[in-house]
Length: 247
Image (cartoon, rainbow, N blue to C red; front, side, top):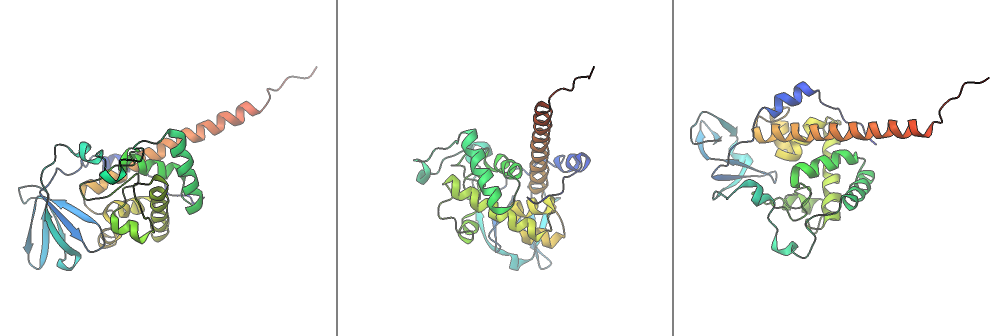
């Protein structure tokens, strides 16, 4: 099983301090298959600026050729309600798996794609909270929130089938870890914002949502690894018989 770099608590605290961006009124479709949210956009000096709020103090700048289209997005009741909404086509499938079923599924996918099961579990928690019916504003689906184009590339026929979704997400995460030489921060940033954004900024993109996402997943991953290591030590201690002094 590959080893990924754990992030120091100080670094995570710095990332987590950047709160996710507020809901915006436009969805920017990128040619790499991902998308970004903004309040509004404008062309400035040959670039496209995506403004994160009504004011124009904060923005993300892209090249026009990186953008495939723009869609207006109505304001939903709440982000949590939208992510937990069930897709009609998935209504016959269980929204929540048992903890044991999910653990076995993640373990099998992790073994197949050389990805730590704890990492997969951390991504699932951040992406969907274990809801197999979850659908994001951008259209990402299932446990590991695969975009339709990404799912197609990964050979996932139905993102609402937990086994297919987890297998596809594990395969994608494996490819990203390989691409970024097992640098977990960069792989997670690419999973959230797309490899093109990571490559453009030569690191974690300056998107609040992406930075908060990376910190959240790494924090959960470190927590799970710590628990498993403590359990392993306890099991070893229990297996060793107590020593008795000789006469």
